[in-house]
Image (tube, rainbow, N blue to C red; front, top):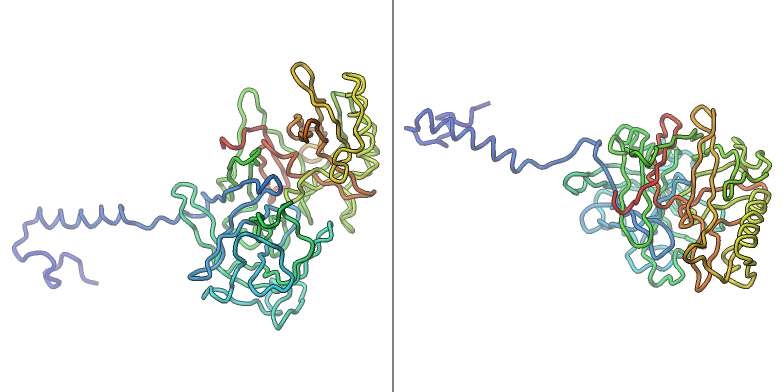
Length: 420
């Protein structure tokens, strides 16, 4: 170990004064500060969020290194654990205007062996750990699991912070993924699973993310951010209270819905339809950013629909138009409220912390209704009993939502998300 100002190195002139020698050392220190490569500890991490062509909310999740580096748009999905991307070599591929992930060009990519601890189902595919995911709406992907570098953004500099050894799926046989009405304009290349399973993003980087993330879904084409770790924070003000509800994260993010009110009137719904089913997961109420709209079992949906129909009939004499967009929505009207005319409010009544008391999540007309041609439709859908029921992305717009997975809490506050 030789001091940099040592005469043996002959960096400084032999006859340098003490002042010149001291200034030389000072200059080294200050230049180090200016050129130091910033890499935050994982307290300030984020990724961008946007709506893809009025369909799914997506983020960019860079994968790989070198010529294999790709920054694909992926659906933000709190309703599933697995992250996967469509890979080069797929034989059942959905159309996208962006490239598939070419893992062969990334020098840091490796296939996962069947004996790897994260290959927990012990499925095999072409000698590697297999991927086989089926979603409720007849979508599925089959392929293999690999590991590579992924990245989040430094909240201060915007630079990429690498996370090595991220396990994710390479989808090679992908069925039923209609991410856009015009798939030639589709920008989505995969799904970013933010659930709680052993191979989820949160579980793999639990030390950095600490079981905390938040997002704020902006309306239209506006951009917002998703935050991880200590940076995941929300706050209110004199007119906006932060509310916290109980959340069961045993398998999905189940929240305890006690009931629903329309225009201030509580609807008569059998509460058992929202009860958590810890075995088959066929019942309950799950917060799911990967679903476009809230979906309710018919025994819960029909009384709510009847209350909305009654509201518009008694207020304005309007009747539903059964011919308008019913291939997509269950309730549509040909008229549209203007001036003093108003939509009904709707409140979802959730159990508070420790399942004690009730906390109201109040939706406005932008969360509940969508303008269609000269009319509008209610953006809550129905499925056969028993469910499960889902709180979809459209009903989460302009709410800042914090998932405290480690503590079993979910907090929310109204916010104009494009300003966050």
